[in-house]
Length: 88
Image (cartoon, rainbow, N blue to C red; front, side, top):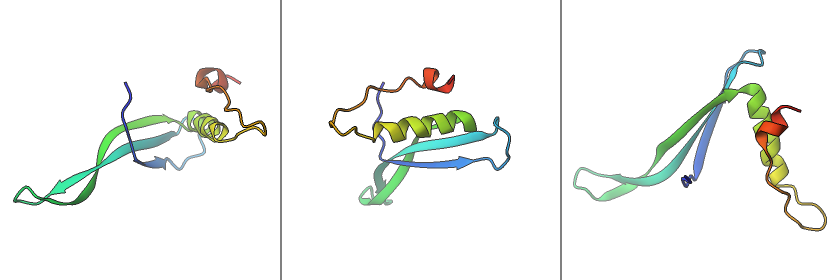
């Protein structure tokens, strides 16, 4: 299932342990209503939060970075298999 998101926030625990956690929360902008039911603004509604180890977060960050790197020939690289990448 695909869910559209247009915002995110993230946090990481402060220890040096590789098992410490990284949290990323995704959101979507939605209308905010006043007490008369009129749209009065916009708010971010939480969609989902993911919790992962710092090591997994580093692998994810590298995979995202590589997706935005285009070779000189302009061809888009194949999607990255994170399970394979994590075991390297």
